[in-house]
Amino acid sequence: MAAIGSAVGLGNVWRFPYIAYTNGGGAFLIPYFVALFTAGIPMLILEFSVGHWSRQGAPEAFKKIGKKWEFVGWWSCMVPFVIVSYYIVVMAWCFSYMVYSLDLRWGANAESFFLTDFLGATTGPLALGGIRLPVLLGLIAIWFIVFVILYKGVGRIGKVVLITVPLPWILLTILTIRGITLPGAMEGISYYLTPNFSKLADVNVWLAAYAQVFFSVGVAQGIMITYASHLRKKSDLSSNAFIIALADAGTSFLAGFAVFSVIGYLAMTQGVGIDQLGIAGPSLTFITYPTAISFFPVATGLFGILFYIALLTFGIDSVFSMIEPLATGVQHKWHLTKKKATALICLVGFLISLLYTTGSGLYWVDIIDYFVSNFGLVLVGLVECVVLGWAYHVAFFRDHANKTSDVRIGPWWDALIRYVVPCILTILLIAAVYNNIITPYVQPWWLVILGGVIPCGSIIVIAVLLMKTKTKDEQHTYHR
Image 1 (cartoon, one colour):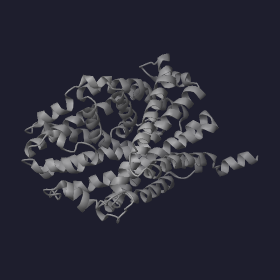
Image 2 (image 1 turned 180 degrees about the vertical axis):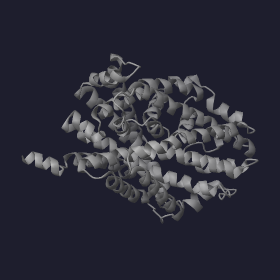
Image 3 (image 1 turned 120 degrees about the vertical axis):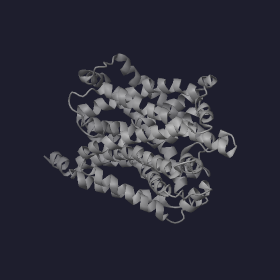
């Protein structure tokens, strides 16, 4: 349940529908499921096997494989920690908007309210502006809730996810039913699902499918290794991987109906084409959807509250999973109590998050998310496959998974880990670098260094330093 909660997050609601539409609509499901079965599920099985075998978090698991590979474990923990520093700010936005839904505080102009009144958006990332109090208060509330739940360990997480995993599905189903009953909903759904099979000849569509699967299911982040380390000895690893991946895919697909039915309704009420509305990222969640809610004929505030509660419950489990690997690594490395390790990580995370509460926060969320997701995670995944597939015996982990699994995997799985997934990730990485050389993601070009190269490079440096840091026990053993 915790692993499903980790895989299913805010990206399922605001990223998948847009990616599907722009890459062939209904036809996108073909490359998406190919990617799911050739990369997503095999990587999940691999990480489950590593965690279940080692009974440790990612740093200690890779150290057990080979001491020189410990840095890969720290690296995989640092990337989601950087992600959670801004991810949790987006949740703070959702928290505020849940309250604002009571009186539809965004009024007739949701865009102006979000950018000016709420965020106080400045002219660019270097014009920081002041800290926005509503965002700060929401941030404090979310970080405090996360600490209270995490410091007791996975036992408390297990109890919380019994609520936070099924609840957003229930709310999403309610929102979907409400959405498809609105006038104009079918036009929106048709816009979302109309297949464009000519897109299948475009290599970028296949790359988009693999990127979506890879980032969505939560691999290469130390998360699944850490969670699997707590599984019982006879847990069915392969079946768990299939269940989690398919639950993630199903949630994304369902979210498309909830989102595009409302977008179709909004387009009809405003008398504009669907392509004239914002249907991606923050604009979808905090401008397009609030505008549509304002036009609902009945229970406007109720559906606004339900929507943002659904987003919060989708997001909170992902936040747990992005903090837990690093907290576990720190706890084991320096023999701290769970409470002290969690408090330390939450405090550092909160201080980093303050950057995103300023007037330039929206810009930095976009910049850091782009570079850390497109470069950080891809690099970790690539190194992980090389280390486990070539520097170690990947067949060992296949045998370990088969010992407890009803779905037995064969040598074909070894080929996927050693050849297919690394090739795909290499192509993704090369394509991303090439695109930024031709057309930098942000201007001026040195912002690519500031927002991309420095954060990604710092993560690697810190990972290596953490690996080389000796604890008192290790120093004593070395002295003896």
